[in-house]
Amino acid sequence: MKALKQFSIPFTGLKLGKHSFDFEIDKSFFDAFEHSLVKDGTLKAEVELDRQETMLILSFHAKGTIKLNCDKCLSDFDQPIELEERQIVKFAEEAEDEIEDLEIMILPRKETAIDVSELIYEFITVAVPFINKCEQAGKTCDEQMLNTLDKLASGNEEQEEQNDDPRWEALKKLK
Image (cartoon, rainbow, N blue to C red; front, side):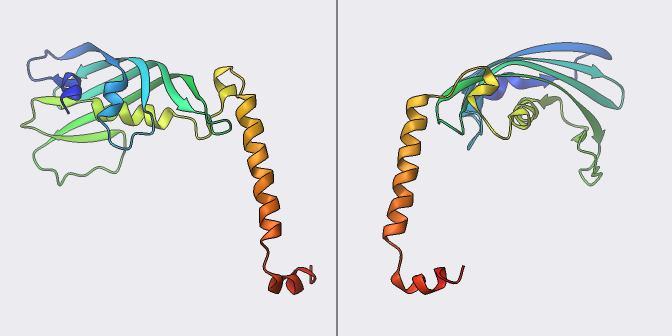
């Protein structure tokens, strides 16, 4: 987790009011998270911390590109991404003060810093499209790969027809 040490914001010495922090996100950031959906990317994240007496309000803005695999042709492409998110951090004596709101996070009063790496990672991961296609980034899919996949798919259908068990023929006639 050494790569994520820079994402820790010490807030105890900060005056009340707004403070801005900038972070560079690259491959080492995503490598720090096991089984990460995103393997590589180049983003700039700005975190504005509004320190108040009883809470912190964090505003996140991240912009850049992430590398994704096309679900259609399997090639890599750069997906532009931009996000705006907000997180409220309240202080409590005990962790038993659970809040159901996902926008509110509880931090023990004895804490002196907040690690924003997991929050940034979650926001980026949620911003990844459900279906990834080259067209999203303005590119066309690899035609050679699509042709190869079509040939393999048609070959599998022929093999399935040839490998049919003769015992099922009677059931197919019932259609």
